[in-house]
Length: 496
Ligand SMILES: *Cc1c(COP(=O)(O)O)cnc(C)c1O
Image 1 (spheres, rainbow, N blue to C red):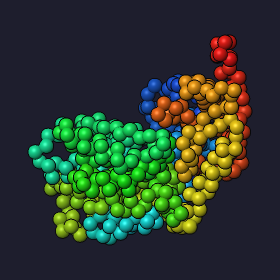
Image 2 (image 1 turned 60 degrees about the vertical axis):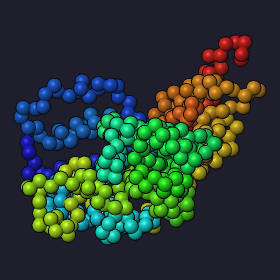
Image 3 (image 1 turned 90 degrees about the vertical axis):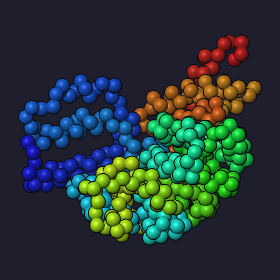
């Protein structure tokens, strides 16, 4: 039965009460959902109800059926993938935004949506230390909020392709190549699939901490151009998902000066938020980003205290987006749009309608203040340093690559009379990881770096503190012991 306003008020209070209870009890829940595949289909009727139900029952079923099937990304012992810190301010921002359900595709459809976004993107650009050329107030560059970093990259790649074709109208599309590295997020390969374009994956080396170097970029460009292939965009990363690698944007940018038709997109989806702290700007290559990036992306919805979704994309020249994406049928024309006095954000990305995402970002930035926001980033990095110091001091664990901001990539590497081969270490670590992932009280993820199987610990949940870091390490020590024994049993007697 549809809720009326007063019933909504009551149901809304109840929902907020339950969300508060969820947060009170979160630390005591298993991090990982314990359900089996198909559990929900079994629990739910085959068809939507013919007659409306009492909403109280619906809310109760959320508690009973849905919550047990959730993995708790806000749990203080969630160390998997990447941070997705969420805040009450962000939740309330989304609540208000969805309460008016506004597709905000142009200025006229709700001036506040466009104007707040333009302001919040400028606030953020300043917090991150981006060059004024990227501000919306510059009138030339500007920032826009997107669904995800994948979406931001795809949009940049579409715009880069358009620009390249305008500059080189005789080059067949078949010859165009997207450049990524082996550490780039899968968004590069995905964009290649979507656009039907070739993607070249550039190798990076362990001794460079998996960063792209200028010389190898130059070699590959020359090699490709000789074959008639034409790279038109390079996606570089600040803080790769897998290993936290930071490409040498300074070197890449320097090489690309000789190839001005190649767009440089900087994907800093999780680590970009470190730029709010002046002490991390050098490591995150702010200077090179400001000098060379054609576009820059980071996500509030990862390490930025804002609940999913809120990705941000800045370009140095907004006409690069609008030249590629502006289609204005008669029914979307407006006086201000025609006059060019307002931003029509629908021309800056692929979709038409868009969520009012800037509201939650505005709430969070005002409630935390720049200082509180920096404090959160610093806290996460210092917690990761704590974990890294345990690994450094342990005789049984070793870094696979140096810790990067709030991410540590390591493996079990016990001292043995004979050093273990890569293959042995990989099989030992697979056993170790399968034990870790059977635990319910912590969650970490695995990765592979140039053939080395490794384990990642990513800090970022808003409620993680030093006790959770210590507990995670204790769990590792405990499981490592068992893993080493199990692994020994798999060895042929002669080589034991
Ligand atoms: C997580 C991540 C992405 C993907 O982010 P979405 O917003 O989910 O698309 C892209 N790049 C890097 C470096 C990431 O860590």
